[in-house]
Length: 492
View 1 (cartoon, rainbow, N blue to C red):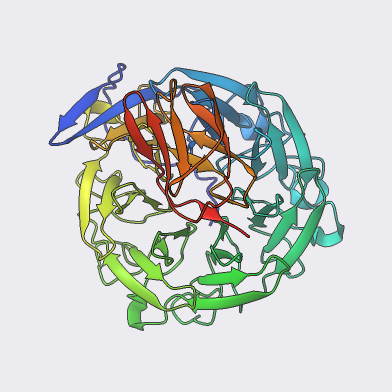
View 2: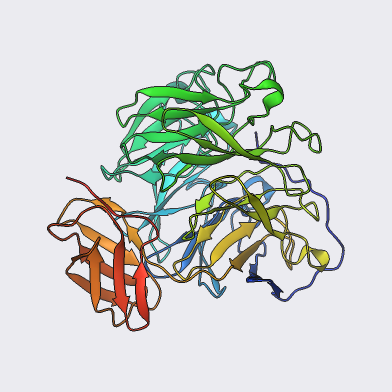
């Protein structure tokens, strides 16, 4: 499904130019920043919180480049209060159209992908077949790899998805096209840029992966493909998408094919990736399917799938509560999942929702609730929970300039700490992100004291102590004790 779609319906003619906060019971929605063309327009990706306490993200269009007449996209930094700085504008040869978000790697730099651009233009209509890039927190960008460097693009082309850094220190990801069969592939790439094709999809086991991977606690990677699989009746010739597992060495198994139930009540076309929850199961979204007839092809579903492939549909959207979810979920510190729908809802322009592990959905916010959609519309991206407890996200359109927004949603959650990485052996270094960490007096790994250094109000560096076991990391500060949002896994 190509996202180069410039048509949309205007919400209203009048635009409110000031960022506005809306107070709702026990929650506060705030427009932090309205993007303009020079900063980038139509953000499709979510944000990542970095070790410096700021949020980093990408915008696929706009900026100073001239790709497709709209600009080649940008990378930006934003403070939690909304002060935005453009770090880099793509120019085409260095990449263009960064649909995916960033990850901060263990070396402190950010890594990401661009859907187009790069050194190889012959196979991709003169626009380039996409790149993997590295960018420093100050904005120095290096192209790590240009896709379609091999004959017939067997190394992949057009990566929609971002990367995940695995336990082995390498990065893993997917490309939408290319591979041996032209249906996309899974790859591994070293920080230095050596790429290995791990698997080429062939429709029967999936095709056109839009989403990235997640490394499970078993060491394997899990992901989705937008199309392909064994069920082709409802999605003629293409299949309705899959959930797959792949080992670090490249052995792939399809663990679920969507539209296995009549009328695709189990969902179809899983556009987004998965998350592994604290209970060990994976949770995700399907853009279409479900029993509702309010949306063409169904309004989409929320599902749980075990590592073995048993899928349970937790919720089917009906339009009134949102529809067509295109983003992954995030499990918050209360144990519930939070996400967005790209459209429908009370005003027709998408929602923010909460879903319990058992499947109860609550709509927290409906976009275009302000005059002129000043609060944003069409949130294609998911949410990130900052260590201050607040959720942050983006919308592709709306805002003061109708180029998209960055927003926050506070539901009253307390601050916490986050470990980078959230696994490692005894003696390995760990970065601990948080808020107001200055003056910390204690760091423990599941109760075992650790040696640590406070680098800033948002960063502590510690070492996994001898005798530590898998469990919660806690930091004692002058204002209270902060606990990690997920258990730290001690690897032996």
